[in-house]
Length: 247
Image (cartoon, rainbow, N blue to C red; front, side, top):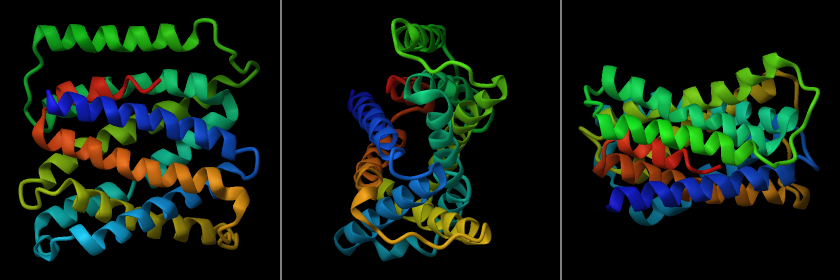
C-alpha cells in the first residue's frame, strides 16, 4: 500500500508541474523552460545532499546506471513534454502520456522479468482508457496541429518509462531513491547545458519571469523522489499505471 500511495502522490505532483510549465510558456520558449526546470531540480537535490547524501554509493555500479538514466531523462523527456504542451496544450499532452504504462509493461517483462497477471493487465487497460476519455472529453483542446506532433508526447512517455527499469537495476548496489535522482539530474543538467550552448544560445539568468519553471523544477524533484521510492519497494508493473493517473 505504501508504494501505491507514493506513486499516486508522485502522479499528482507531476500533474501540478505540467500546469505550471504551461503557465511558464507564456514567458519563455520550451527549450529555455526545460533548462530552467532541470537547473532548479538539480539545485534542489544538491541542497538536500548536504543532509542526506551517503558517500559510499559513489563507487558502485548504481552510479553508472543512474547516470545512464540522466542521459535521456529528464533532459530529453522534459524537452519533448514541454514542446508537446506548446503545440497541442497540456490536456492532450497529459492524455497521450497515459501510454507510459504500456512502455512500462514492456520494460518490466523483458528487462526485469516481472510477470504480468490478468488483474494487473486489466487494471492497466482501464487506467489508460479512463485517462484518455476523462482527459479529452469536454476539454478545451487545441486544433489544427500536424499529426507528426504526437511524436513529442509519445516520445516523452517512452523515455520516462525507459528510466524506470534502469533505476531499479541501479538499486541493487545503491538502494537510494534520493541518490538516483541526484545523479540522473546532475548528468541531465550537463547534457542540457551542453546542447543549449551548442545551439549558440546564452545560458539564461534566473529571472522573475522564469518563476513557474523554477517552482515546477523543485516540485518535480520531490515527485521524482516519491516515484523512485515507490519503484524501490514496489513492482514496475503496478507503479507505472498508478503514476500514469496524473492527467
